[in-house]
Image (cartoon, rainbow, N blue to C red; front, top):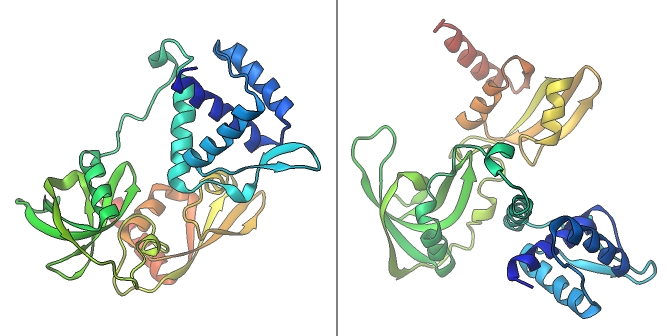
Length: 299
């Protein structure tokens, strides 16, 4: 069986076990059905399934466990994959679906805006892994000429179809965020750096919506009110991981968040127009009202 077909089999097993526990016989029955649909042979033996379990964990960090009492395999809800493995799972699943669809342009419409800044992604990821310094030309949108930057790379973050690098600027001696799409002439230095153990890059954006983090602003308890219809969207795609539902009824969805009041967050609120109302804090109420008044004054 070709390697690509094996990936298809992994995905079918994962999709089944994410829905419900299943015995090996039920897994094979499911694979038999998918074999007919895909025109391939996904049948597996006990030994093959054990190898598949290991491969699924290696690829997606999903642990296929066995319940001996019920004689069923399952994937625990607590074993949800990390973001990177979730994205990989989604990518494979999409690719798997497209493999068996003819005339894709007439049946599937993708977002035309592709993620920006992928040219240097691999090199930066390599530098982060090896703890090597980077140098690159960087041009801000509001400046005419690029500046040469020397940094210690810490973390790659995606936000709204763009990739950003969180890094310690060696000259400025502070943490900065750089858009990969504004970089040029990137070089990985042979010079290595030691990580500051007090700095945890993975926690840097914990209370940030977007990629802008203020240096001296406190995290604010923010309460937002949506009408019921808009609230359904907010429940299925939360603003932030700190989001908690306070009220959920036929008239209103009210949520609380713990975030910095950044421009990225305010722009997101404005994109919801009349379907969101800021209840607190007062500082955010004022800034949103001011932005709406400025927008109205243009018409």
